[in-house]
View 1 (tube, one colour):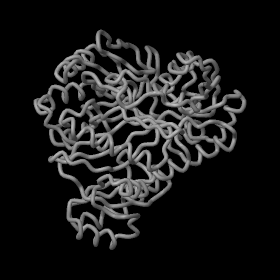
View 2 (cartoon, rainbow, N blue to C red; view 1 turned 45 degrees about the vertical axis):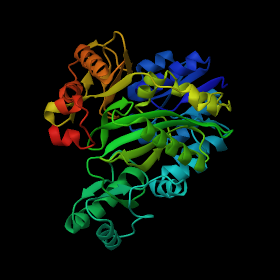
View 3 (cartoon, rainbow, N blue to C red; view 1 turned 60 degrees about the vertical axis):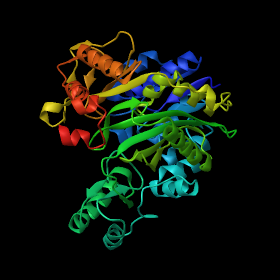
View 4 (cartoon, rainbow, N blue to C red; view 1 turned 30 degrees about the horizontal axis):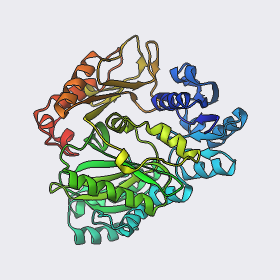
Length: 445
């Protein structure tokens, strides 16, 4: 096992990784930007190094600065968390070139799965269903129009090199496609440095279901079942749950086996999430793979009782997975709500400021992952997520009740948060009846 690891991230995920390292006896080095000098996670790290100003490009995205910090601290490995440099192939390669273990997949696997077009080809090779669409990059508007005519509207334009809704456009006719194509390319270029896009048939009223997997360098790969991430706003996840409440055991087994086939085809090592959409007939289609730990990984941890961050560390250190698939079981239902510093009553506008009153929820079945504290100042420089509440119950109804109780206990003042929006969703009759899809929030709120 490693003796010292640098965490190239901030906020709740930095604290989450530090906790896992502490339990494994690994010393930790935190990096931070100037505004994050009083961050809570720094107090729990063995060492902390300032890597620049608030501007991400000069701090958390500054590869040279992070590598320098790693060399000064004499660490053996770097954990990138999620976001920032977690899926940056150049960063992963530089880590290895500098003799540092990148706690993530091999560069080749990142290249295969990180690009959505090549990932679709890989899925096809692994005999996993994919959504009808382009075989590669769409070069221009005329090519897009021809393909849309062939597969039929509605279609969705997607950035080849990224996610999170950037570079994505849903179109219903030729006129909409003409106006959306160049806009999607420009947005993808600005967000990811790559303006390439591809086209897919849009599945009406889909569920977003993803499978958590881990794999080691010895050819062992396991799944930790699935998460339903259908509650989204503008392609950003808000609420996640496990297991997916509409899957029967036979479909679940096929879905998880399909995810493992993709991972094995890519010769993947470490943790990954393989994402699918599920149509109204419960047919699933591969859409992409995330070559990192996910924000919503605690949902899986709650139902399987496995620490996924520890698995990442063990696998990166070269340890063999000494489990078989039958050793992984899931019990009960877990739900996660992402709490963002945004004002739902004001079109989810950012709500920065200093927290003067804070009460965190607790009680049976409640887990809170957060880095905030009373006196912490929420900045506009970084992502607005300030906490995650994860609950576990025997049934979905139990989990919903526990989550509503936990949310009602959570006090953050004077910063506005998405707590009221989460409560509204959890209380909606269609959510309770499990009649949801990725368009649920836009249609009902």
